[in-house]
Image (cartoon, rainbow, N blue to C red; front, side, top):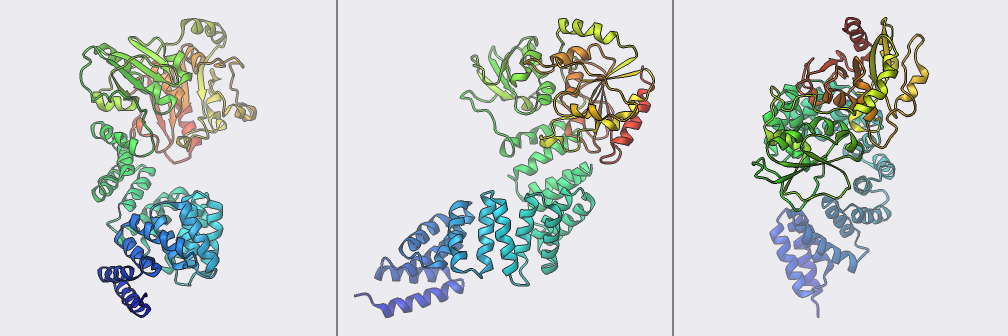
Length: 555
């Protein structure tokens, strides 16, 4: 017969020990309970809670799962199991348990909070917002975490002003709440209020100087405002606090490269595989930079069309070093890149020939030891099709004046396009220069702006058949060979013009992509390129006036 009185006594001692933080005694008393009654759910519940507090999540899930299966009405066990599942990022299971908890305890704001976090982990932001709004309404007046969590959801939904208000309220309740201060800084950054963001993040670091995420976010805001050196320092501090902080390494790479510190920058760039990119997988090993020895090297594209055009330059160089070189490129670029000396071009998805080692294309600068002062394989390293050049020559030469190719719009759905594209109407000062003939090289997105040009602005087009075939940029390359100048935003066209060795001016936002470096008017990647930077973020009108002044003197 089970001794109920003894079990009750052991249970009370176990609860007292657990609440007092004596986990060893609590566990011992529970084991004694289970020796008397091996199905005792109260003992398993406490043991599961002990395991959770000790960080033994697998044991906690096992024990608490048994409790919930045996006694589904034990809501506190359901809640604790949900908390463990939340810690393990098992969001679907956690959400299921917290739904039970809010049903059983509809006035308990903490359970709505937990459910909101689980739904956020599932990406169900709309429902998470509703749940956390209910949590906010139920919460105690001195509870700041519901405001912070709700602000985090709003920010993820793009509701930045509402998010900002939530973080400000969380900080009014708890002025030392470093996570809310961090989130406030991130939101200010997203709103373009970078100076305030930096001040907010520095304040958050003062609250919690050992948090690497705060240093990382500060680095992002500093870089956004063009403060490259302070950004480098912030990323280094984040890495000093967490050596495997992949995002900090990855952003540090961008800042180092922007500063022209290529040796360390390319090393740090290899952290991209632990962050935003997925590497191709092949049974053959990665190339480590050793000599060819008669082997075949497969190089594979990994980012955008412009990146492939920029970094394909190294393939012929490696062929000269004795490699048999095979390069996997985007299907659209195969025809443009065919014919590189010593290089076999294969479109993504086509069968691959034999190869011995492989390398991602943007690892080549690291493997080859490329520096900002000596970029190998100078342009031109691409060539346009002679027949197409001849085809366009007559049409273009019948247009008198200085022939200037124009591109203003990148892919608006691409994350990297933020701030890079130029409203075509802003470039009207270029059209006002006597003897200038603007010719559109724009394709796809952005061509609709040709229908709404300001009075007096004319931009000629090249017809519906221009670059309409299966290969990208074939006509663009041929047309460029018949132009006097190309003026473009930061798009793949800039790389194509540079790779062809054509005169090209690239119009850049105030803080451009790392590859253009800080404050450079020239470009180490393309000797024929000239760079024009905004002096104030978003001021394309001012930049266009400056470019127009230079264009009026162009020979």
